[in-house]
Image 1 (spheres, helix red, strand yellow):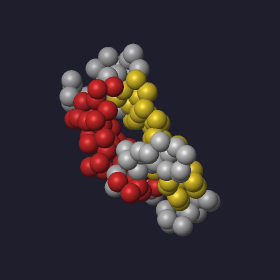
Image 2: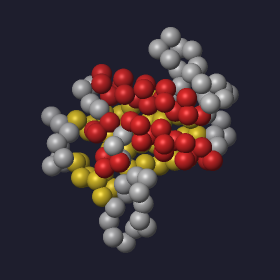
Image 3: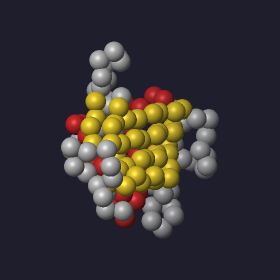
Image 4: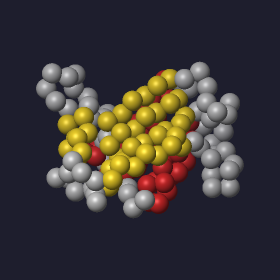
Length: 134
């Protein structure tokens, strides 16, 4: 998306952050909602049993494929919502996210610790909202 149509900012008056942006402002474009992605390979098998970083990488690969299907990429993502079972994994999540999303393009983000996900062996689920230029 054109940077003139998407503005990410951390406004004065809110606590400073470097791991995400407080605000993603979009003017125009198509809004894309991507369902929560989990660590399943294209054949349906679990990737990285018990390994948070391996699961996170697969989740981002799945998200990348979903974005590509609509002509988008990680630069178009304006909001991520992370559901994870252990908040001590947040630093590992940020490390893996950095492999896929440039620090200047970090979207708005929410992270929610949950008691469990749809399968007991899943450690995270990630959903996204993206905006693609018309």
